[in-house]
Structure formats: structure tokens, C-alpha cells
Length: 158
Image (cartoon, rainbow, N blue to C red; front, side, top):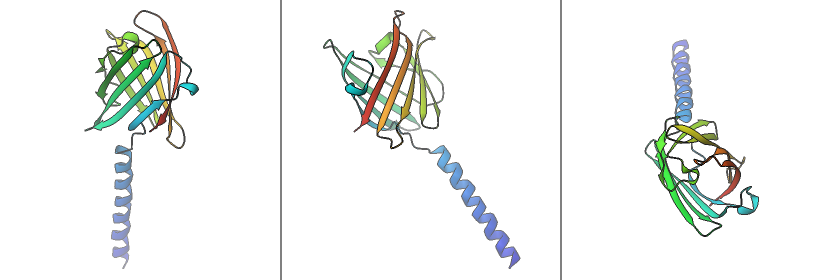
């Protein structure tokens, strides 16, 4: 009886540890989905509208962004990459003139660094509301021309 109890205890412990490791490695990405800019709640008035779509792509995420600017121009850009701190190329017309982006993750907070020719231009921190329905991007730094960037943009999950 003691041996059966020991085997069952070890098996249960192994199952618990295995589940915990699996949950950590497959922690869901709160960015996944489509997000629309809430202009009224954002601290930046250059954009008339913006839609961000985050899609799983194997062990990476593909980010597609469409912006309608207040002056009537549009920008479409994005990247595919992991939250591993490595540089991934931006595609399209990126605001601020960045060429690459690197992303790191700490829980449900993401920090991205956008660079040109390896030089850091601006940093964006992405946070989420407790219910996961609101995403806030806080960007600080400079663009490729040296113009200061200080923006807070709020997005609603669609």
C-alpha cells in the first residue's frame, strides 16, 4: 500500500510540474487579434484612424498596421518576429523611419525598440487592461530626422 501511494504521489507531482511548464511555454499572447485606435483616449492627434492586427505565425507573431493620418496620407507596415530581443525588419512605410524592431516580453508587458542602421530611435511599451480589452502603447524617443516622439495611443480590441 505504501508503495502504491508513493507511485501515485510521484505521478501526480510529475503531472503538476509538466502542466506548469507547458502553461509557461505556451502562455497566450494578449496582443493576438485586431485592435482599433481610440482617438479620443489617445495622446497624439496626427492619426485619424489606425488598425493593428496581430496574428500567430508558427512560433512568431505577424503584425500588420494600417494608419490613416490627419493629413489624408496613409501608411501600411508591419513585421513578423518573436519576443526574443532580436532585430526583425519592418516592411512598408514605418512612422519615424525605423528599419528594424526588437521585442521583449515580461508577463503581459511588451517592450519594442525601433532602430535605423542599428541606432535606437524610439521605444514602445505595450500594456493591457485587466480584462484584456484595452491595449495602450506608450512611445518615446526620436524619429530618423531627430524629431521628438512622445505618444500614448489607446486601442480597443475588436
